[in-house]
Image 1: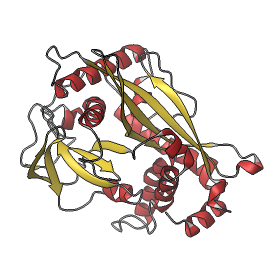
Image 2 (image 1 turned 180 degrees about the vertical axis):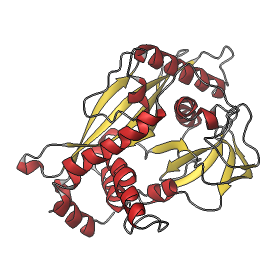
Image 3 (image 1 turned 90 degrees about the vertical axis):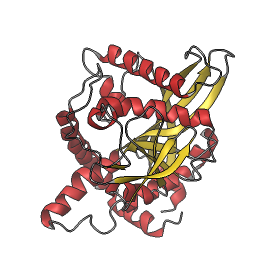
Image 4 (image 1 turned 90 degrees about the horizontal axis):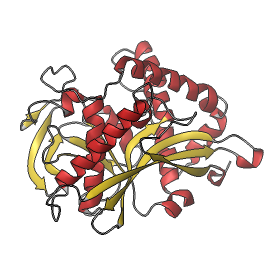
Length: 328
């Protein structure tokens, strides 16, 4: 099968206080998780307010009252058809976020960054099905050979597709938590927006996984943050994006991390020069937005099994053949 038969379609959904997750949205995704339960609208409203406030604190130039900007979020849902000529159903591959900055002084709408959050069903399959089963059968052996290869190739294929090029002008930037299993050292460099740069001695499993997607990683702790973030990118993180683009990513993803990993990103003291994140930290503050971490872990396994039954097994031969001949 030619790779051209792997086609992508893109759907857009506004992430605002009225957002309701679609049926094929991963319910463990940050934004979908917020939009559940009795407090869903209040959760969303408070989250969006936190993002705007953080954006204005970072984009302080020409902004004396700290209310000049607002961030508009759009969920980008990517579906992939394995063989559209045969009428096969499209599979929900990934979801990412697109930021748009609203300048209230001028009325201008400014493109932000595509990426930010990263939600992937196939990644659930790799980390919640493939890896645990391999570790059970081979204790201490690390990830199996070829771990993440298919996912990485599918992601690269999407970035090289007409669907991506026609809709987005720059490569994505994904901003995630640093690993609680690694120690990070302050590098001494400071970026005007990204803040203090950190380095580590060895890649985390997530770093290695994103490397197979063609993405490099740098770690920065922005001014006013209490821990560094992992910024996964394709080109030059500090040269390819404007200050406002970078601020849109920081404000959005720091807000999510304060909610979901308060032990790290809402800690009451900032990261030191040599820093190891810990989810066992007790010296932190909670936001007014609460979620069920145990439920989220359980649902990730369920979603991994969904991928196995609906995507991996039915198309295994086709996917294996395509992966073996794929050239980025």
